[in-house]
Length: 407
Ligand SMILES: Cc1cc2nc3c(=O)[nH]c(=O)nc-3n(C[C@H](O)[C@H](O)[C@H](O)COP(=O)(O)OP(=O)(O)OC[C@H]3O[C@@H](n4cnc5c(N)ncnc54)[C@H](O)[C@@H]3O)c2cc1C
Image (spheres, protein in one colour):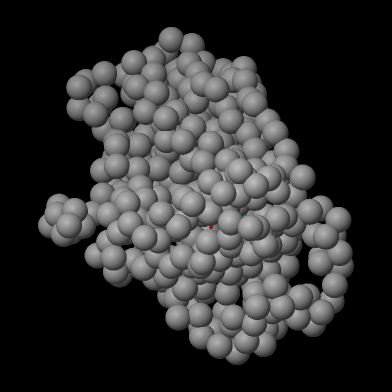
């Protein structure tokens, strides 16, 4: 049977857009369904090095570079008042021979740049409507649009975020959980330079993180108990900026709100398996976890980049790109990375909330060990940026650089 497309991607958020761009670039006839939009709530994404390499390989990085700030230092400050509080720990990208760990950019700007690029690409047909249905058989995946049109493809990709209609239609199960926390987000300007440093204060209610943006601006993710988050969200801009300045121990001097503010309740979700007949999930359609440690979209972009590699391999072998062999291999490869990141973020968050001496001791000892042992610290930094196993092709740096890194 002839399909309309090789691949249909549902959802034009950052993961769906990047995946569609990657597949179209490789000559797959690709349809992208959905309106490109993102919440305008002060949310930014810290794109780690592998993600930046991916966006460069897609030819889209140049568009957005001026809107992004490099992150060259990552500072962790234990502000729990625990008995086993370690001194602040600083990680520098120079230690692993990089110019930056990655770049921080407003989510809305990232999506706007990806969408602008998508509109220029051959092999990529845009359908700016909602997807309402999905079915699959041995020959094709069929996706129904809200205007009644039906598109067929060898493979469908669910990238419509946490409530993915394709995932539901395929009957893929999910595990969901909630945290007693809400993240308050904002963009602020400040009197002192951030020097491209991101600072994460670990508090008993969760991390309080300031991440650099271009100029003397930073984005804030302040994870708090829900009642406290409500109180902060209700403050006017002046009182809110003062509260942030105090919580940051005046690190960046006087602050002012310089963009939108938002509030996001923290929760988690894992889909299992990550595939169904002629369907693969990427991004938050597959996994959601709290905005701690800048992992969510980086993981979502790895899903897209890994799927691109799998499809190229399958096509080169002359096989059906929507085959169960391809999907099983993709699902298995992504499950390990997803489980590792979900587990690590959950553990870190829960140890902060616990207020329990033995866990405080372990967390403190872990950070202290990292600050004292250079080789271990460098290994953790590299692994945090991109996993050493199964790194997708377009996320890898040139071999000469990797050799230098290995020192
Ligand atoms: C406060 C905060 C800070 C964060 N910081 C970071 C960070 O520093 N680094 C990081 O890597 N990650 C971060 N994340 C996580 C990151 O924002 C998400 O992982 C990412 O936005 C998910 O992208 P996505 O494309 O998978 O899903 P989404 O952004 O949810 O996009 C899904 C798209 O699908 C569309 N859609 C939904 N239903 C349909 C339908 N029926 N038909 C068609 N389209 C549909 C939606 O409108 C949307 O456009 C943060 C998250 C939060 C909340």
